[in-house]
Length: 154
Image 1: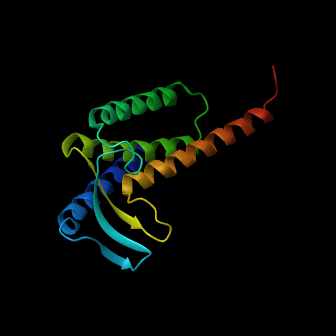
Image 2: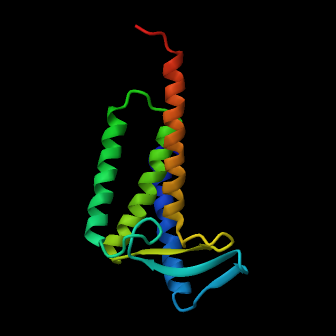
Image 3: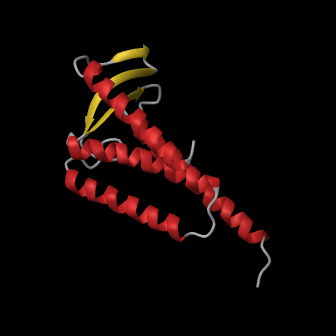
């Protein structure tokens, strides 16, 4: 699966799981998978980053588009493209577009994965992809720095 394919795969899985969550979970408070540890819980997230800063829908839409454009420009201009960078950006793009579509068409982001063992905020597939993608970008920057240190100067 190529990098674009990974983005599309994440987007499709995100859209399908949110559609299922909206259709099946919206009428119930929560569906325990493992009581007190992991539940499916329908949440309409009107903020960003796990519900923080609610109520800024247009700002969040514009901010997401800006970040995606900046990441695309960064990708085009960088000379050192590692698999860490490419997979990281693919995951971020797929996840960010999934949540962006929710904000545009629903007015909120559907969250439904409820990991209660550590009282973590409810999240979705797109959030997972963005977080893993961000970790891969950090690894890319560390690996790129290591490679540059090994290159001869001048």
